[in-house]
Image 1: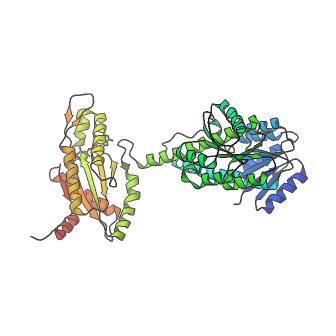
Image 2: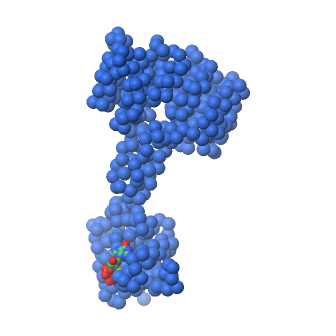
Image 3: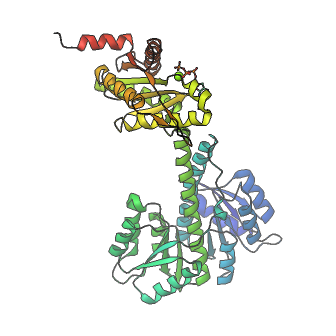
Length: 470
Ligand code: GH3
Ligand code: MG
């Protein structure tokens, strides 16, 4: 994984040393010697991560970090503060300024590289989600997502794997300040069982368990689909940085060192929970807008865009499997009269009910779509002309045989549809020709007096040829 790292420090040898180490690990390094220069590079070069010194003349690291965080164009870039300050209050101040981590010089190389890699990996994943969300947002159906920093961090459900009652109590007591619900498990097996059956927004894993290695549990969490995305925060003894590095490689997101400082724990937990919620929001917006882009908002059935994408694929498959695909095209008869007599709103209700009746009377893998206006299409995979005619006839009668209630009135409506049928799945059949043939058959049905089913000529020929001779 190659990534661009911005190293910021006012002391030249510090920059050189860190840059050399990172270059040796194949990172692409850029450097800045003061706050304003760092901000300019952040804008111009959009690095994947910033390693930021805190004490610099003029603008210090806290301020640089706050500025990066307050600009929507740069707020997603991970920032690690690397500093001679070792006071817990400085560390908490750094985390509160929005830093993802706060490392004290001299920095352990293994821990640093592992940290950089895991933050860069996370950033790339988030970038991917943001990109997808913004693409899907171009369909204009979803309100833009709030920012990472406007997410709430309270009332999370947290699972803690810890076998020391004292340590668990300290963690739980701290997290309850944010009204979190904290659940304890004292073995990896019990923790895994709960993680697989319940929802958690964060898992805290102690690496100081007496009888087992907490990293095994981390690796199990990452290998199951259900728990792959849950953030993991490690709790480690000082001097155990090699295992921290291993944990970050395995996919843990962050760590705190014992003895735990409550404010630091809280700051790190909040970051993880916010990020998790933000990511969930991006993902659900994306999925929602995708489904909205492919469905008809009035009736909830698929739209023309989906048919255009899906029918060609069904035809390809039909060619391979030698199974036909049938298309029913139907249109409400004299729908204009419904609108003119009862109003557009009642017209809409009729459209919904027609879509409903069609969907309810088909197999689950058949597909109903509204092409526009009062015109619908039904696609029936693995269905020949005879079967398609039976389905079409059933559909026609389900719509015409029982009346449609008119909302807010005692009136009832009788609605009928005309249906055209075509069958494809042979070489040369395309989605366009199949739909066109069904459309021509539909036109014939209208001419024959409406409320009836007609198949197109080719489909009719195939049915006659396939019929048993008497
Ligand atoms: P035919 O039997 O020949 O199909 O006659 P028709 O009246 O159904 O056909 P025509 O094409 O003349 O009229 C279709 C009407 O459908 C006109 C249009 O206002 C109405 N319509 C199209 N889309 C919508 C919609 O989303 N809601 C409502 N309520 N009406 C719609
Ligand atoms: Mg019509």
